[in-house]
Length: 123
Image (cartoon, rainbow, N blue to C red; front, side):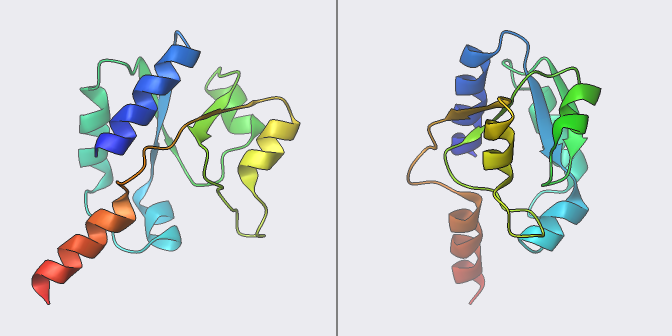
């Protein structure tokens, strides 16, 4: 959605080479429930975005190993927290390691809002 495109655009300003993480279906299901778009569809969309140079599959728990494996210096994310299974804010952990950059989250649009609107349509 437009919020994701805005996040990618802002990230490209921070990093001249941008690797976009596409969250795998299993991680989406565990964290949020059923997927609206399947992983292959999300990857195809990200492939078409002009600001993305490369992409990788990720889970909701990205750490230094994943960044190193992708040859990335920083993890860029919106200014909303992301919690791992232990209830820790993973972005705070990355920040403390000097590997986190944040971007301003787009207000007024979210996947949760879109899902809620779709559910209202079928009720």
